[in-house]
Image (cartoon, rainbow, N blue to C red; front, top):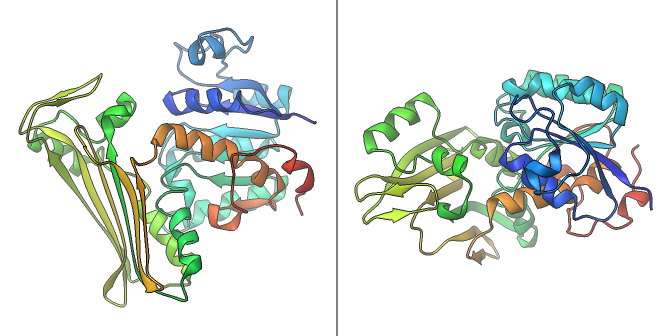
Length: 341
């Protein structure tokens, strides 16, 4: 079986998880990694991610690495905001390789960044490559899974998706991103700065609305703290009563003056009943619960890597998860039967 060559672009916590999972998949050959962190450049990728050498030194020269290795796919994980990573994405696209990114705004960028979306699509078509933004959220649990769940409905009136997470099992950057350990005033200040916020709600709502053919009036969002009632702790952070344990964030897609799509994320230390929940007011109604929830970091890596065959076989240009065949945990020979058109 022909191996699929991949390059990892960005070796932070998510990039490292992508590397670990990709190396488990038969048919994938990791040929290089890129990072600008001077503490990582020159070091062996395996030593940083697996605790053993792979013979792949991390480089900060993406152009040279891409030209030398000619990968089939680049897995990109460096930032959440499209404007911050646009130059990186265009560099990868112009190298002539398919691209899968965990950039949250890339999951459905048409709403906030129509001009960048058009530019990425045009360049991808010119170079004959496919570009996808995905992950667990956005990318799967609060959009793709919701869209698929409406497939059994003859009519859909309203949708609600709840994601209740035990943040204590997540990586330290995530726990900091949700404000764990801050005072309520510190939390409020960081929300105003835009440094505490789940990025992707607007993208998920817009993707769902598009899949249903709905035209929305607007999308509203609110970010509130989850205050600890008792002392809670993770391996990294200790939270006293009265401090912030995490975030409670809600977004609404308003249609004809009503809240047609509601997404709620509660991620905090001390969560006793984590779960994923989808409630569809429709005919017939749907109520799905995944008890225990889905581990965000592991699932992000899985969604990205498991989407590789679909991206390899997709049409050139920019695509979203709703445009592709469903990913699965089987890699196998699928890519041999999927050809770009």
